[in-house]
Image 1 (cartoon, one colour):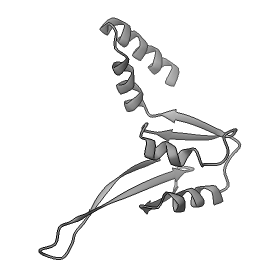
Image 2 (image 1 turned 45 degrees about the horizontal axis):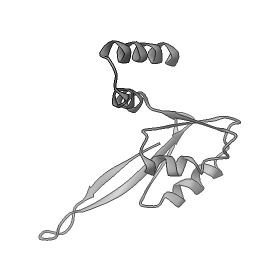
Image 3 (image 1 turned 180 degrees about the horizontal axis):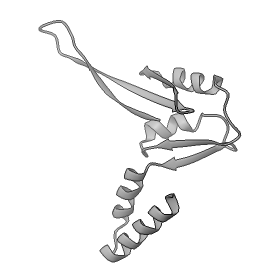
Image 4 (image 1 turned 90 degrees about the horizontal axis):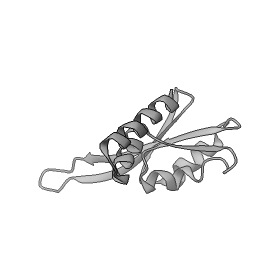
Length: 112
């Protein structure tokens, strides 16, 4: 799941409008996106046939996790922070570069 902003052009002389969207993909080829309606996205995903364990990959933004918490039920969700944001948060923890690099190496090995 991910989200972002799309600039919608307005008639000449009027300011552009930015609209927030969220998009989700399941089973490699089925996807859905909507503008400014988390409820629509949640209803759509929960109408899909979900497996016993649903891996939810997000970037750590509250807007994403607020939707993910409504996917399926808590017992079937496996919530995963994407690699870029996991690594970013690792470096926020601080410590010696050697220790951070060692932790990053462990995360790479664990992830494969």
